[in-house]
Image (cartoon, rainbow, N blue to C red):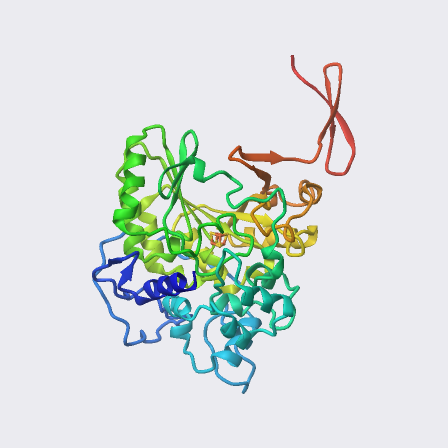
Length: 458
Ligand code: SF4
């Protein structure tokens, strides 16, 4: 597993080979990473970044002003000065662990991938590990490899194993337990896999697994049976059967690209996949499910967003877990995607000890809206093997929804769903607002607990 993961990293970061194929002419274009972070108007362009001709593109809409994206100066006289807008945590982390790494490198998504933390010895350079965490990595029996980008690690507490973000990316021994209700494939995706890498569970839409690579692995991943194993390739040969299946099934109008993380492939490869799909006349909607904007926001380059906007209507669901993920870097990434006209929604898994309280969830939803990300789904954690320590009672999710609905903007209230084990699909859950019926009247309860009658038309 580790070997596969290493080889994937090498391919992702090599900039020349992805999914076993050479990607010709893949060079950094002048607007691509590393970005010129917060260039002062009139400042000369950085030298040394190759400029390649690009296809004509529609002019970009005027940039929206995002007030939070200010240059945040370092503490005076306290080491290297970083010009990238970032949180105090990230600046402190860079000063401690990467004092000589330039902004250009730090903001290069390929540099971030090359420097992912994947092994116990690497992780111990950054974190004081609890015995439980060290044992989980030593015993190595988890299906899911370790993987954390330096950027995301900068948000993780070095000393507190209970910190929410740390719990989501650092394994513990609890992952190795198996409860009776748990399964490797709780959603029955394999049963609905029409061809390798494609899940056709709903009548008019399919899930296309672009590959099984993620830059950062979530310890509660529903697809831990697959991701990080290096078995699902993003090569054209591997993807063509799935594309042909979609072409042959005219009832499919909506394709969700997922994985692994679809945004962790190079622009050219992703562009090729999207082109193939857009050439299918009966496809109306393309969607991308990703965690990249928040674990590797450096990946959201102007070059990427320019490419993505060619494939509208293209929607994106971004996986968010906790408000601490909403940093200046992530705000900028979401801003770029939103400016490219991509409607952004969030997907959040309800996790014990991470986000299972109303205040945290409300803060996350508010931060998302500020970044133009519409809260979309709040998922009850799927019963994958080793997830018991993450799962909360359903009553907790209902309590959170009841605490949001009516108490804050309606846009800030996601749909709370259980993805039914066995492949039954998403089933929405709501607190009981319809409390009874009296003749033609419905008895309704509002968010304050007051009851009202509504005469139900015959
Ligand atoms: S980003 Fe998604 S696919 Fe990747 S590990 Fe996290 S939950 Fe799984």
